[in-house]
Every structure is written in structure tokens, then in C-alpha cells.
Amino acid sequence: MDKMGTLRRTHYNIQSLEAKPGEEIVVAGFVARLRDMGGLIFCDLRDCTGILQLAFDDTSDRAVFEKAKSLSGESVVMAKGTVRERSGKNSELPTGGIEVFVSQLLILSRGATPPFEIRDEAQVREELALKYRYLDLRRPSLNSSMMVRHKIVKSTRDYFDENGFVEIETPMLIRSTPEGARDYIVPSRVHAGKFYALPQSPQLYKQLLMVGGIDRYIQIARCFRDEDLRADRQPEFTQIDLEMAFSDIDDIIAMNEGFLKRIVREFLGHDIALPLRRIPCAEAMRRFGSDKPDTRFGMELVDLTDILKDCDFSVFSAAASSGGSVRAINAKGLVGYLTRKEIDRLTEFVKTYRAKGLAYTRFLEDGATSSYEKFLSEKHVAEVREACGAECGDVIFIVAADDATVFASLGALRLEIARKFDLIDETCLDLLWITEFPLFEYSEEDDRYYAVHHPFTAPMDEDMEMIESAPEACRAKAYDIIFNGVEIGGGSIRISDPALQRRMFTALGFSDDEAEEQFGFLTDAYTFGAPPHGGIAYGLDRLVMLMLGKKSIRDVIAFPKVQSAAELMTLAPSAVTDRQLEELHISHKLADGE
Image (cartoon, rainbow, N blue to C red; front, side, top):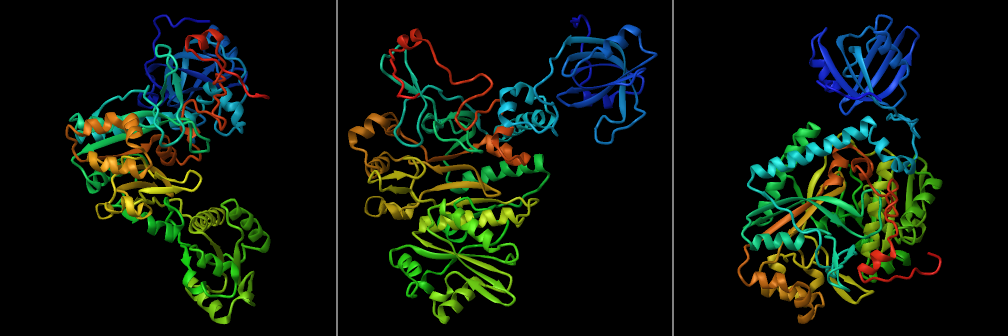
């Protein structure tokens, strides 16, 4: 192998465009492709900025020419030469009009044949790509994603710095708390039998920073949750986490709308109009069946409960009489696509959301076919059609059940139809706030209420007196920001009154002793004076994914984990030695079959 010696890179590939013809430059990178045409050799050199062609011919120094012939794919090289116009131009490359005629070539490391082609067009199994992630990162699109992620983080820091925020790191080893998702726990060697938890968020610490007089806080925070994974979820993830003292909902929303406007303009070239829409959560559920609605298309839910509560069809009337609802969507103009076979598929689809069935009416030119209208009176049929705005070419779908099932199934069905039949304008940017979330949710399994967000979320002022008497009706000073039907961030105004915080703990089923044990440090801090405050946290991985138009956050994380929470490259998690366990005062026994 050659040594770099005194040779140093002068230009990245893209910077070669700034060089004058005949100027001598030094470039470095990986051999992406070699084309040996006998007396002429071309090498595509790849670096983090793109591809540049290196050229060798029969006028080249013989030793340099022979070294070029010996190149193999993915070898690491450094080349010195003169910039010249390329004879066979490549309009698909930014540097496709020039090349470097090489006078000195160093082979710094020879590359073995990779297990897959290092190019964006190659079809590679995800498991193989993740096993060799260091090779996958060489692909231009993935490499570019890392660069864009960096720039979004920098832009974020710049914006909040300009607005008086101070970046502060909070601890990674904290105490475990009972609310929220499952913690990752870390055993303590020094404190036998005790454990730290990895933070699900810096929530408590950023509230304590407000008590500590840090007026505006921000952190690019690493967070951890031991929960089942999906395409947009990882066990470890990154948040843009911030908190503002002496603020209310309008202050926080205004600050964050300025941030969103900047990054959308900077990275997508769109100028979004402010203020963004705000939709109360209850309205979003009624209209779209979702608290993170995609409003780039219609097909809103129609409430048929009052129309059908007294009908003779028991599926509908029973749902209404038991406190549930009967709701519909109208797939306008899709009767030619929504065949009986497709409707059968959609029926199975909504069953995954606990719906027992899917009623429908197809409006054809020669009449309507329906799964339920024969059980209804002519009056009920006419009223349903009118309420849904049904016309020839439409298909009505109806679900009757408890509200949670109706909203979940029709909300998902609405999206499924829109995606499959291209009803979504992908060029449209749909940014909006969902506000006034429920403060509590009831668990029948545990026979108790849980906080929808966390126990430190403040109730709406007008709902304060219902905390004990009607917790299910309490709304929170909470807000989520939605980007094209995906929640990219959420936050709330925090409780800063110790008496109100104690009421909240009581409503959540904590005894005084339990509340003191788990959160006494916070309530004690509040007794020394706490400014009103609130904040928000963005999922950075999800935000970058949407900005780049990717389908999975794995495409914007350098070393992601798979659905089993394993990392295929280093084979984490792994076993540890008995000695390590002994030092941590831990013994373990695997269940049978593990």
C-alpha cells in the first residue's frame, strides 16, 4: 500500500468545478467504478460530495497507468492531476463536464469485493445492508441523508440560539419512573441491587432547569424506550427538546412556527403561511378519525348516529344505544376501483382495528348495491345518502361500534384508500397543530386513569374543577405538530403549582407516599417558586425522514436497529461474562427455550 507522504487533498469532488482548466488538484475517495478500455482507463471516484471521473491514457506515466489498471472496486485512492474538459459528458452528474487527468496515483487501501453493489439503484436486502452498514453508508443517497441531517441540526441550533435558548445536557443515567413506556434499566455496581434508567426524555430535568432560572433551554437529546418497534420507531432516538419559562400555549406555538418556517424554506424551498391551523383533538377525531390527521385530501367522517339510532338494523341501532356511534366515509368517484373483491380486502383491513365488519353501498349507473340498505327504511336510506353527499360513482363505507373502534378503523380506512388510489397531493405540505388533548385516559385493565401525555401536563383553566369529579372530560394544555399526517412533535404547558400537582397525582391513583417517593424532588423544588413554563419535543429522526421524503427513519440514522431491537452489524445486544454480572450483583436464569 502507498503512504500519503506529503500529498494532501486540495479539493472535494464537487469543488473541482471551481478549479480552472489546467489547474492541478488533489482528490481522494473510493473507487466506484473502473472502465479499462485498453489504452484508456476511466475511474469513477466517489467521495462524500459525489462522483468525479479520473482519466488515464497512453500518455500517462507508465507506472501510474499500470497502477490504475490494478485498481479494484471500493479501494481507497488519492490522485493528483489537472482538471480538463471531459470529452464524453455525463449530464446526470454535477461534475459530468470535467475530469482529472492523473499524474500521481496513490492506492491507500485495497477494497475486497463488497457483498452488494455500492450504488443507489442496487436492490439489496435490508438485513444484508444493515449487517454491512459501513458499506451501505457509502451509497450516495444515504451519505447525503447524513449530511442533510447534520445541516438540519445546525439550522435548529442556530434558530434557537438566535432566540435566546441555552443548550444544556441533562443526565443519561436517571431514576426509573412508573409512567410512560417501558424503561431501559442499567444496574449499578456501586449501589448493589439498585438501577438507573436511560431517559425516555429529559422531561423532569428541563422542568427543573426552569425552576433553576434557565429561561430558555434546548437540547439535541438522546432518548430511549424499550417498546415494540415499527418503521418510524427505534429503541434509541433523538429529540429536539426545548422548554420556555413565562410562556403559555401561544408563546410556544409562535416560537416553533418560526422554526418550522425556517427549516421548510431552507430544506424544501417552500414558504409556509403563518399562523398554522389549530384543530382541537375532539374535532380532529370527529372529522378524520385521527389525532394526527392528513388533511391533504377530503373523505371526512360523517356522523350517522342520530339518523340510524332508531333504525331496524340492530348492528347500527345497538351501537348507538350502547353509547357508541355509526359513522361513514364517502370514497367519491371510486366505484370502478372499489370492486367487491377490494371491499372484501378492506373489510379484513378494518378488522385489524377491532371493527367487526364494514357496511358499504356502491353507486353504479344502473343502480346501487349495498350490504345493509335492505335492512333500512326508505327514509333512513335517503337520509344516509344525503348526509354522505352520495352520487353516482361513489362508495359509502360505514362502521358501527364504540367510538374508539369507529375512529381507529375509519381513520385508517380513509388513509388506506387515499394511498392506494393516489388521492394525496404529495407536492402539498400539510402542517397543523392538534390542541386540547384529553388530560386522562382510563384503563379498564388496571381500573385507573393514566395521564395521556405525562403527569406534569396542566389542565385547561376551565376544566380545572373537573379533575376529581369528571376526569374523562378534562382537556390538557397540550399540543402536537403534524406534518403530512405524521406527528413530528408534541408538548404541553406544565403544572407549576405544587397544590395542583398533588391533585394530579391523586387523580392518577398515587398515594401521598408514592408521589413523594417518585416525584418528591420535583414537588419540593416547586415550593421554592416555579415560573409558568412549557415546552415541546420533536422527533428529529422522523422530522429528517419527512424532509427527505423517506419511508423509514432507518434511512436517516447512521446505525439503526431492526424490529427486534438488534443491531445486525455489531450483533448487539450480546451476552456478558459471569464476572461482569457478579460485579453488578446480578444473577439470571433464562426461561426454557431461550
